[in-house]
Length: 244
Image (tube, rainbow, N blue to C red; front, side):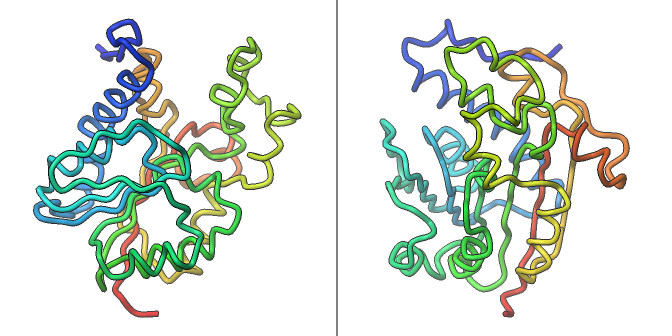
């Protein structure tokens, strides 16, 4: 049975969401990366758009290496061991220079769909890698039922529960930076990265933890168009060999 993370079990939203991120990493994100044949032991991680940092801490516990969580938001981070959090924008050249050549794995969990200049971001991600390395990306395909991010962006409105709300005026910023399955694969090719592992979901893992729905893979991942509308989530593990 799906095990939902209950908001009522935590005193604050920050505690709840950090625990949710930790559970997502432990039960789904880490197993996916390892299923791609990547040994996490001793790897150094850069978590771009880390939010409350629960996934960053969970990966650090698994790798035993250094981890840096990066976000443009202001969160009540609690640093532990070799884990550092920074309020910064990966698109800024100075930030990219400060991170260059330090990491084996970069993670973007539901972040890429918010980034306006994705090619620049990928150049900075490659620069952050220590030669050969990996980039792990998750996102909800834009044209899927909740790809407009209405559940997060329309807080307080009952409209947030309705699927396919992409035309809502409050979601125009997501429309401008949208991410699709086909668009992501083109972006990876332009960046010179190879797809090492991919999984598309009819019901994404976050739905299991937040709503108690079972995680379901998408049975027809090769069908363009259909997958953009019916997949609620995409996981990609990219590999870069260190050559431009």
